[in-house]
Amino acid sequence: MRPIRLVVRDDDLRRSRLTVFFRLFLAIPLFIWLLLWGIAAYVVAFVLWLAVLINAEAPRGLHDFVAAYLRYSVHVGAYVFLAADPYPWFRSGVDYPVDLEIDPPQRQSRWTGFFRLFLALPALLLAAALGGSIGNGPPGGGYGSQDSDWSVGFTLFLPAAGAAAVAAFLVWFAALVQGRAPRGLRDLTGYAIGYSAQATGYLLLLTGRYPSSDPALAEPYADLPEHPVRIAVDDELRRSRLTILFRLLLAIPHFVWITLWSLFVPFAALAAWVVALVAGRVPSALHRFLAAYVRYATHLFAYVYVVGSKFPGFTGRQGSYGIDVLIDGPRRQSRWKTLFRLFLALPAFFVASALGSVLFVVALFGWWFALIMGRMPEGLRNLGASCLRYSAQTYAYLLLLTDRYPYASPVLAGRQPMAEPLSVPLPEPVPGDAS
Image (cartoon, rainbow, N blue to C red):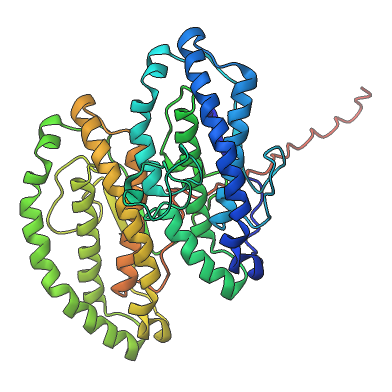
């Protein structure tokens, strides 16, 4: 179990339209209070750093003060990003629908404590790409600054290009119209907030355990319903250092091939669109052609971004690669959704673009780690596979392979239902037995 854990206590997705409309305005007092608390928390964190260097353990009182700040920042972040609806007010000790559990102080390595800021930079950069931080950094940064896109979480307000910020932007519109938040976007935001809390807690010496980016950490609260386009991860974590070093050069033939293939895809998609408007479904031949293209692109980018290990084939055949896309056969589709498909796909492309930035960070750190250690961290591999799944679902939706909308939840497996307790029949009494 991780020492810093995000807890989502309910599945209520209802949102008050009035508070949603004025959400940022209502959050201004929270930002001010968080800024003041943050100044004190980072001063105390410096004392924690000295304590870890001397005693290899943080004092309980100082640890609890910084932990309360981090917990409150999660409450504010969940409120601002529309992952939760109640107003968090100005205390961290109250239960909140999106909350944080932090273990008591444990012994930490003095060496990792000494280099903590340097060691935390990769995690903070990934947290910035995910965009789940509110006030999780030294005060002084701000929205709209020149380096706000790459401030590795050192900002007070919303990161400019984070996946959670994009998800919150879309949830804002959806909540105003429907009065509720889409489940997949809420789960993505929760995962981003949880990872940001891990990264910040590691930076602030609350734990010596390095943050985990594995989307499996979101499984207790996130869901993954059945979808016609699914990701299949059956790939080893070992990486050849030689092929890692020259991976982009090795992928040049694939870049040429996918460019040639892409020349024909718009014409096939246009033909599929016309037929689907008339007949209500895509012909099998066009479906196979477009599905193979989506699978091949996923194989290729899994290889380029170090998510996959082996050199992919050139045909996009299902089952031919360790990071694969399973696409169901052609089914009937709504003509209304088909008519406005390009317009309807725009929000999904916003999310896919933000997740593309996350995938780039995954590839950057995965490349260095694999080059040194000869393997890919499982958490980064799984996060990369999650990003690729959403991208494949987005292009499958655009290319009329399905009319099911892409689902943004980061997990690779849905929540398993709890098994019912077994009922063991009692033995029947033996005639004449008086016991």
